[in-house]
Structures are given as structure tokens and as C-alpha cells.
Length: 422
Ligand code: UD1
Image (cartoon, rainbow, N blue to C red; front, side, top):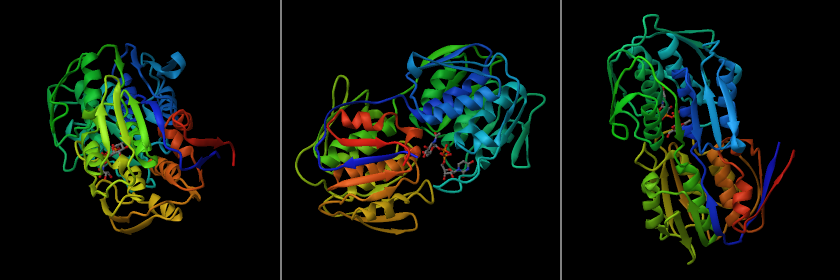
């Protein structure tokens, strides 16, 4: 298992290119199942989660070919042989549930293994199930698999989600494109990844309106066709790298960054005393004058502060001037980075879904362990700020969502290296 060694204290200066969004790509790829014709995705990130989704689609009989060094994915579902998403693949990645809607819509049946728990909480799939039932499918849980069937095809319906779910909105949206009649998705997620999916589906011939608002309307069509679609910028990778010059003191331009993807986060940086400016090519972030001010954060569905940036923001708050309160409202168990940050000298009190962080002058390097994807990158950020050496182990979590993290940071002057197999 690889580790990453960071020696902190160097201000970062330079440019960091931001990749296409992992979470957008993970819902765009299963959209291939909706048509016989080729779907080409450009600006795709090279990540282990993307490889896992490729393996899942290939296990169903889809063709997935990486072109241009993995930056382009050519997908085709003209020869699907199976509608069963196997436990061995699904257990590696929850986003596997996103094949449910497309399989049901196109073949009237799907068997998808339940993903099981994950480190950040129970994360059930009842809302995915409810959406498919509203569209006329019958679902049954047998031997750990959701067996779904709609022999006469799906039909349009009102799907009124009791809470906002990104994945369930994506499944509902994809399934509704081929359902008979009109579907209205209420209390829909408004994340940029949903907007990106809707754009791609529209390019494939779907009739969709209202994406980016909480009501999405879909008029079902008989069939979809192929398309070429560029994956939207990864706003979580963007936010993560925006913190690198802040935590070390420095100036970095995030190439491809857009303020509209990250407004709530940028507002918090502004309140903390950080300068963020739009440039013709991205977003420039600079911070030269000592510690940032402590700010409070509440995670919420988009356009609120993203839960996927909470751990990274906590790393910054560890060295802020004053006390900040971070409230996690999306996942029940998403403070596992706190005890690791405390090993580096951070002062954090966690009570239920709230963490109170009292900023310290300086963190100190320590051996720490990555517990999930975003937690692992928060430890790297903390390591960049800390005095001495930090060794982050179990970085396979990191490789699920960040490509070439050490190269991107090293190009800005960070002292960071990957150590293989320890
Ligand atoms: C997606 C993102 C993830 C991000 C999360 C919230 C992908 C691949 N992953 O995950 O990085 O942290 O959005 O922004 O895009 N819930 C239920 N029942 C369900 C589904 C969800 O109760 O059937 C709950 C979850 O446990 C959670 C909340 O709804 O508390 C929101 O989760 P959801 O938006 O569905 O997250 P994901 O789509 O899994």
C-alpha cells in the first residue's frame, strides 16, 4: 500500500490544472446504457473510481475504450449481455447503483447488488428504489441484490424526494428519459453534476427542462442516440487545490476553475480573509499575510457548502485565528479526519454532527492514516502546513478521486512524494 510523505512549510506558487469531475463522469458513463449508439466523453479524469465504473459497464457487455491517454472515453452499449451488477464490483464503489435506472429503462429489468455501508455512514439506497417504483418498476430485495423489473416499460410520474439525493436524482433522470410520458422530479438535487448529466442526455436526444433547479421535468422519448460530451470541471478538486496556497501562504492559479461551481466555498474563503480572483483561464487564490480568520461552516446540498470539502476546510481551520464550528448535515459519520488531525496538534472537539476547531499557531508533522477519500486529502493539506514530516498511509482512498496529486502539488513547490508499497 502506497503512502505519501509531505514535508511542510513551503509556500506554494504556480498553476494547477483542474480535471473533469469524477462524480459527473460516474453518472455520465452509465448513460451509455440508454442507447445502442456510441457515447464519447471528453475531459475525463484518470482515477481508480472511473476504472471501477468501466469494469462494471464491461461486465454488462458494454465497450469502454480509453483514448488520448484516458482523457477521452468511448463507450458503446450495442451488445449488452447482462443486467446484473455484481457484488464484487459494487462493493468497491457506491456509485455503481447508477446503472439501475438506465438498465431498467432500456431492458425493463436490472439486478444490482446493494452497496453496503461505507466509512462515512450507512448511506441507504431507499430513494433510488422509491424513484424506480414511482416510474412503475417492481423492486424486491433478495440475497443482497435489488431485483427490479418493469416488463411493460417505465411510465412517467411525479417523483417527490423527501430529502435531496444526488445519486437518486441522477437515477431518476436517466430512467425518465425513456419512460412513457412526462416525469416531474421534485426536490431534485441541483449540483453541477446533475446539470452536466442533463446536458449530456439532451445531446443524446432526451427532452429535459429545469435542471439546476429543484424541479426537473422529463418528457420520455422512444430512443436516444449517441453524442460527444465534455465532462464539467471537478469543483471538489478545485476547492481542494484552492486551499493549498491558503494553508501554506502563497499564490496558485487553478486552471479551468469557475466561481459559479464553488460560490458558497469561495464566500467562506473571502470571509476568512483569502483573495480569490477570476482570471481568463481560471481562479487565482492568494494568501500572504499570516493566519486566516476562523469561519463557521454548515454542509448542505448545492448551492450550499459541499460536504466533500468539509474535511479540507477543517484542515485549514486547524491553523486559523480563533474558533470555528463545522456542522456536517449530509453524512452522519464524516469527521474521521479529526482524530488524525489531532495527532498533528490540532485542537478539535467533535460532538455528534458538529466539530469545534480552535486554531493553533502551527501543526506538527506526524504519521497519519487516510480513512476516506476527502479525509485523505485533508491530511495532505495539513501536512503542507505542518512543521516537519507527515506520512499519510492508505492513500488508495486518495487515488479514487485525485489524479497525480503529488505531481500537481510538487509543480507548485511542495515537498511531497509517494512511497510505494509501505
Ligand atoms: C454524491 C457524491 C458524494 C457526495 C454526495 C453529497 C457521487 C458519486 N458521489 O453521493 O461525493 O458526498 O453526493 O453531495 O456523486 N440517502 C438516503 N437514501 C438514498 C440515497 C441517499 O437516505 O437512497 C441519504 C444519504 O445517506 C445522505 C444524503 O441522502 O445522507 C445525501 O446523499 P446523496 O446525495 O444521495 O449522496 P450520493 O449520491 O451517494
